[in-house]
Image (cartoon, rainbow, N blue to C red; front, side, top):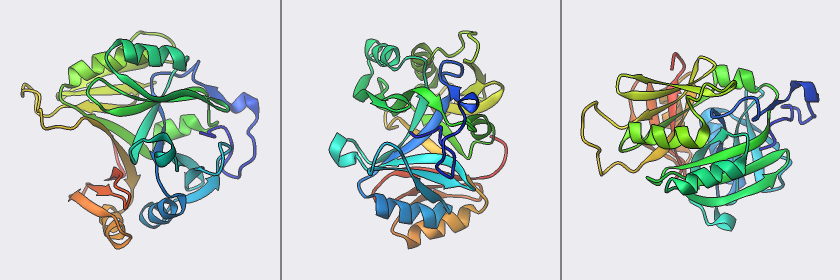
Length: 270
């Protein structure tokens, strides 16, 4: 999570750095746990046009760039950490230890961490329904405000009960507390919408309004990447060893060769 370095790899000036003490509760990064860095880079370069640079965390980590802007992290640690190959959103928190304790108190689990990853600390967690997410305490990359507003990545939680999930995450991440730098929560069309400084940054969905919770739903956070051509991404995924789980004009749910699922969505309002 070498977020505070520039796309060229040089250090930004400290005055440009945003910290999770001033902005919190919002998704601040997305990361893929992978088995093979080279194969992962090849697939996502072909499908999403990403370029790559080293991360300070070591040889197992890489930063993906879209148009020169850091967009996501790849961590080839699935074997070392005994974790699933999957895309995971990370939320900004002032204190990773407090966030982990809150998760445990509310029936969630801590899979990894908190661990120190200069310039901060992170943990990989699961909510009480099994959806995996992470928390990050420390510095964010310096153009994080631009990343947040135009976010090439958007996240949505598919779960059995959106309102119950919103309460869990709200208590863990200090949503809707009115604290400066925090997030607000709104209910729109049966969905929970998380807003950071007015911008929609995440949604929580549990299906049709008034419908009973669906026990067949496997709760998970789905990462949506904005693209110019959904169909081209889908065909490229198939060509490079991935698969298409569903597809329409506006979006396609894809699976990479390692089994990690993600969505490509046509650019436009969220």
